[in-house]
Length: 117
Image 1 (cartoon, rainbow, N blue to C red):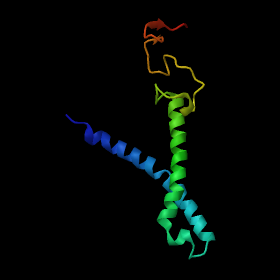
Image 2 (image 1 turned 120 degrees about the vertical axis):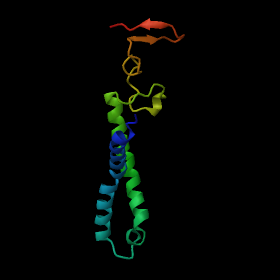
Image 3 (image 1 turned 180 degrees about the vertical axis):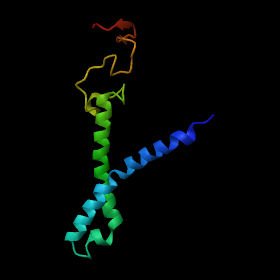
Image 4 (image 1 turned 45 degrees about the vertical axis):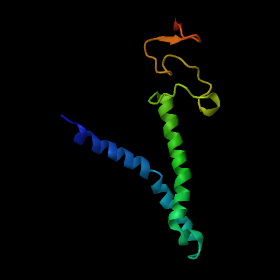
């Protein structure tokens, strides 16, 4: 028995909201900019390019906020991140942040070592 017809609509709605999230503030900003500019300006002559140039930074900001929130709450776990590429470089790897739920960690040579509690 397939659960695809019962689950897929929820996933599709989630993706639509993620992709359209930056669109709504961007179209509002574009209309505000167009209201202040003459009709022969760039934002009037090339509205899709202008909209894309607004959506890109808004999408990056929304995605960064979502990623930071999901990493902080533990929904996302990035086990092998270089320190200068991480927002949370100050956090030490422990059993909870590395995805290891059985209460032990591995030391450098790979031997099992119990976590001190």
